[in-house]
Structures are given as structure tokens and as C-alpha cells.
Amino acid sequence: MKSFSFLTILCKSCVALVCICVTSVQAYALQPTKTVYLYPEGTTESNGYTAQDEYYVPERGALYRTSEPRIDIYMPAHNKNKEGVTTLLSCPGGGYSYTSIVNEGLNVAKYFVPRGYAVVVLKYRLPNGHENIPLSDAIRAMEILRDSATVWGLNPQKIGVIGFSAGGHLAASLVTKYTSAKSRPDFGLLVYPVISFDKNVYHGGSCRQLLGEEPTAEQIENWSLDKQVTETTPPCWLVACQDDPTVPVENSIRFYQALTAKKVPATMLLVPTGGHGWGFTKHFPMRELMEQSMISFFNYLFLSP
Image (tube, rainbow, N blue to C red; front, top):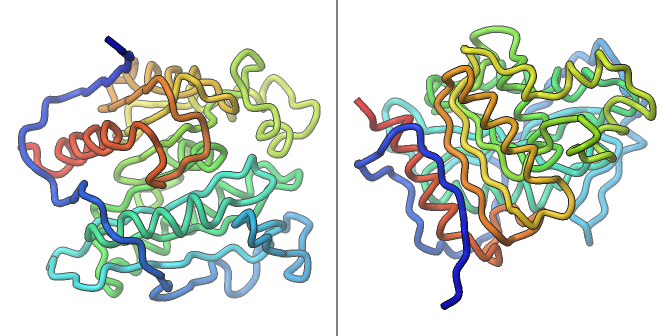
């Protein structure tokens, strides 16, 4: 009998159903409801690129050298919730050298929008030697969402962040390093995330792109996000694969352990196979388990007494 092991850790049992359908939804072409530039008057700190430097590689679905950060907002077609819809700020990965804007941006919208969620894809600036720039863009995006929530039909108390790989590092940075109540996500979803810059478990490319070739011990500590968790970190859900060849699964484990130590509600799903970079595409072999785990997490957040 073929067997496999996986670890699902739930901080609270969930008994209600959440309004997210796990049956297959036909993919369809999505266009953003609106695009909003984060700094219409210009940024205070440059990453060294200009608008002319930015380019897109269609075969990879990848955006390079972004200098004008912006958000693409995808809304569900029929929003009947008077309180506004639950919203996900999506941070695509790419090792901080590009953003995987299709696989971990547009495809996230294709998955969640038909299920009644708003998805906001963050086209953040790549660091290019400026370590604080990606996080500053994520903070600004969250502030804009909160300021505009009522007008745009978003629930201001249900705005979370989802991040993948290096975008998971950015999302984890936001949940641990937010600067105000306005920029604090209500929850975090971290998918095969980069967490630690400890050389024993790190993704070297992400570390080099963010901090350079020879980061200081202080920088490594500051951007190893398992070291930055506090009691006020919002609830988080993590998923990763034991056979991930790119970002060691220990990254997710360390973050979960840090959340547990600070008594932050968290769910972690570890599965034996799936590798890295699958986003929310249908070919992920453990998709059903992932969906069940995510449903339980949303039940805990929104339907628990």
C-alpha cells in the first residue's frame, strides 16, 4: 500500500463551512477592475531603475526592473456582501530579481475571484541594492486598500496578504514589520515562502538580491523573519513541500515555530511532493489537501465565535 506523510497543524478545530468553493472553476480571461500607482507624485527613494528599464518576458510571465510600483485590482463580478469582500494582496515571487506576475499574480486572481474574493496583485519594485524598497511598497499598497476599502467594496477588516517564494518573504515581512494599524494585514497566506537568511536553510538568490553579496549579521537577523515575529503578528497559514528543491521546507517550519512560540494562531500544511513554483495551478498534486487546509484556516478566521 502506497503511503505518504504530511503535517497539518491547526490551532483551532473548525466546524463551519466557509464561502469558498473547492470544486474546479473554469479559467477565464481576467482584466483588472482598476490599476492604481502607489506613488502618483513620485517615490521618495529610487531603486535605480526608470520606467524605460522595465520589461516583460511573456514566455516566463515575468516582469523585470519595475520602477513604478502599482496594484492591479480584480473584483468579483457580483458583490452582494454589504460589508465588502475579503481581499488578498498578492505578492508574486521571483527571487527578488523579477516578479512572476502571471503564475503568482494573475493566476491567483483566476483562482480566488470566481470564489468571491478580491485579489490585488502588487507589482512591487525590485530591491536592486535597496533592501527596504519592496516592503515600503507593500506597506503603501495595504494603506491604499484600507483608505479606499469602502469606496471599492472591500471589507476593511478582512484584508490579508498572500505571497509566494520571495514574494512570501515580502508577505512575511509585511505581517511582521507593518508600521501602523492601517498597514497591518488581517491575516497572511505564505506559499513555499522564503523566511530565513541563515545559510543553512536560505535561498541564496533572494538573499543576495535583497541584501547584496556580503550582508552583515544585523541585516541577516533583521530580514530572517522567524526572528521578527511578535505577539501582534496576524494569524498565518503556510504551505510547503518536503521535496522543494529551491526553498528548503525548514523556512516554513521555522516561521510556524516562531508563531507558535508567540501564541499567534497559525496553520501549516507540509506535503511530501509538489516541488516549488506551482502557485495555484491545477497540476499541483496535493491541491485537494491544500484547499481543505485553507478552508479550515478561513473558517477559523471568519466563522469562529
